Structures are given as structure tokens and as C-alpha cells.
Length: 312
Ligand SMILES: [Zn+2]
Image 1: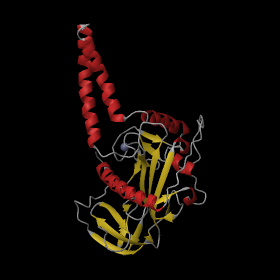
Image 2: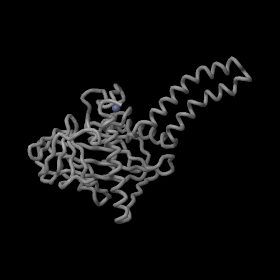
Image 3: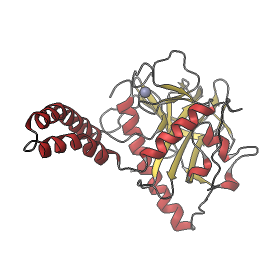
Image 4: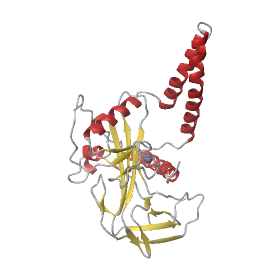
């Protein structure tokens, strides 16, 4: 993995552990409201762009960015897999492909499809030697290449289908911080808007858990999105897109959405469709005036904790 993908994968794994813990607590407090938004038969044919500010999505690694400056993914360096999710046509195509993928267990399906010609070659061998040998010879290298790819996939931390993270995130188990300070957040430029609560903020994180009915997949984290603007606390100035949050991740249900925020639009801007299944949404955000403890690292994102002594 390159271009900060390994950092992002570690960070996402850490965030998901935190959220899982938060979910357990939340569900113990009160039974989580589940939203079933299955508008059966709402398949529509779109041809035009949607009236929304949608992300551009790297099909190769799932990295989401606002309109790209160059047509190359800054994270996985894939040159031509950047999809403009503003296009209804593209979003619908992606939706169809992803729905098909969810009908099968990905790694197993890959092995089976690669192994099928090999099995056919072996079966044909006694009957029709030349053809059998040909099929076997053609399929074996493909099979071994596929098997390598599959084991590489299994050994790699699973990335959500859509993610946005700072480029470099320090692994706190391996890297010493360069500084820390506690104080109130001061804006350093334009605000962001937290996508779910609609709160003006300097940083937010949104996580989305998705489950489609009758597919072969368990619920998956489909969106992990951390964005930040410029801000400062005391003498520490944080550059845009260079902070990660370890604050309190809140589950957001229908009532928790901000004025004028629609779940459909939030999902659609990320190339997702509310009627495709059940979405559980989580958000944390950092606002001007919030008391926060910053921990800084050399050439890696600043981490924002609640004030107070470090929790162990
Ligand atoms: Zn990419």
C-alpha cells in the first residue's frame, strides 16, 4: 500500500474498534432505533447529474475527494479509476456492480472462478489429452496469480468502500508525539459543515455501517470519512486535512439530522442509495470554542482528544 493507505487502514481499524465499543454502550443504554428505508421498486433510470455536491471516488481504493486536481488517485496512485459521483449514470453503474459483489463472498468467489478452468483441464486430461493439457497450461499461471492476489487481499486491512483520511497518521504504538496542549479551539479559516448534524465545525468524522437485505455479506463499514479545516489550539496550528478525532462518536438517527439535512442526500453524495438497505450513521465533530487536548506528531496528523488526562 502506498500514499498513506497503510496509515489510513490502521487509523480506520482503530476508529472502528472505538465505534464498535461505542455501539455496544449505546445499545446497552437504549435499544437502537433501526431504520428500514427499503423503497421497493425505486429503481430509476437517471441520465443527468444530481443537484448535489458529490465526491469523486477512486474505484481502485475507495478514496473520496472533492473535485480532483489531477486525474490520478493521490492515495493508491491509480491513474484512471476516478469516478465523478455527480453523474447519476456513473453512480447507478457503481451501485449495480456493488450489489452484484454483495451477492458473493469475494475472496472465495475469486478462488473458485480461477480454479474452475484448472478443474476443467484436469477433468478433460484423460479424455482429450491435447485440449486438457492446453486448458490446464493456460489456467495454472492464472490460478496461482489469483491465489497470490487473494492471500494478499486477506493479509491486508480491509478498507471501507469509501474513505477519506489525512495522508499521514502516526501509529501511537510506534511513534512518539512531538507535543501536546489543551485549550479551546480557534478557527484558522473557513468552517466545514458536519454532514449529518449540520453543525459548523473545524473537523468531523462520519462512519456509516451498511447492511443490505438478502445479500451474502454481513453488515460492513461502508464510509469512514475524516475531514478538517485549519484551526489552532494555543500555539499549535493545524493545517487543513491534517487532524483526526478521538472524541465522542455519536449515533445519529433521523431526529439527529440537522435542519435541511437529508439522509438520502448525505448518502447520494457518497455514491450510496438510502433505499438499498439499512444504514447506521455515526458522527463526531470539533467546534470552535470546544475544549480539546491535541497531540502532535512529526509529519503526521494531529490527534484530538477530549480534555483531561490520557485514557488508558
Ligand atoms: Zn485510489
